[in-house]
Image (cartoon, rainbow, N blue to C red; front, side, top):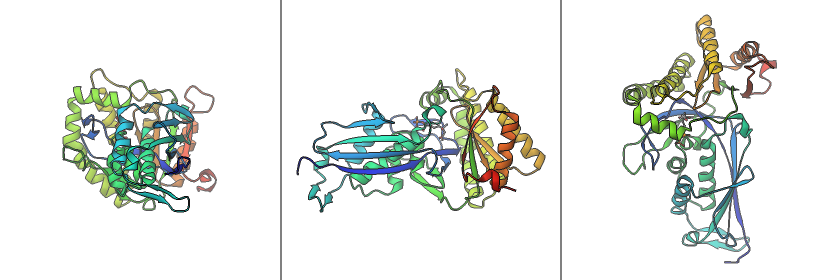
Length: 358
Ligand code: DP6
């Protein structure tokens, strides 16, 4: 092998938002969840990670830069992903440049990784989901791993649980799996991104502050102390998963909205049932819920679904462009600019929505 070459691969992966939440691990090391979950993957134009991975015989160690700043790769999660992909590396040949890397060579070669998020990190939306999915996908391409996206999702899962769902577009199910080694705990696509493309997702940024309790710590404490979680994981979620898949396949917004809101509320109830209780939502989050609930009730059929992850920011899923335009008007009315409760909204859909909607 010549000593001066570099081979690079760049990949882009969007983040995803769970509509049936993952909360609680049955195996912390392998990141195996206590229940199935379902998410919607955002349009790659919004909230996505771009990662370039490079390999060269001149690199002396694995290194990574996140948004231009070098970070340590010593954490178990990065090491798990690197190890699992390296174990699946295959021969790579660049005939034009006369470069040949055999399966065995990968054991001695180091990688450099540069990762960027296209959304303001200060917005409190930074998510490890897009990051680990993108890292695993880019490394797999670089090392010519032959695994399909579901098999890769089981590796991304070991970086961050929710990351496994970002390997697919559309609606995605993370099957909790049964076997001890976690090989069947992976993501599958429920429907692709074209199936239900009139939904509009709006993220209302309530606070850009970093959350006090990370998801990892929060769910550990919940598993250790909440009885409600056990009931949720065993009795509630399995039924909800079936109903949610049906609603998505039939594009039944009323049922979809009901399940999405109920599951978000139960996730936060489980957080409250944790000892000591975890509060991710704040007063503004609660006001957004009331506003959506009141509106949905007054119209008779739901127009918007809400869901909140481990923080106070609202993810609002509107039935169509008209509902999204009305929602934005309501948000501006109830949370006016330059007030204490001003929101910073990201419309993750067609930018011309306000002009076009009737
Ligand atoms: C509330 O995937 O961030 O967003 O597996 O410990 O990295 P780790 O946790 P993470 O948890 C996400 C929790 C959630 C719900 C969800 O995305 O399903």
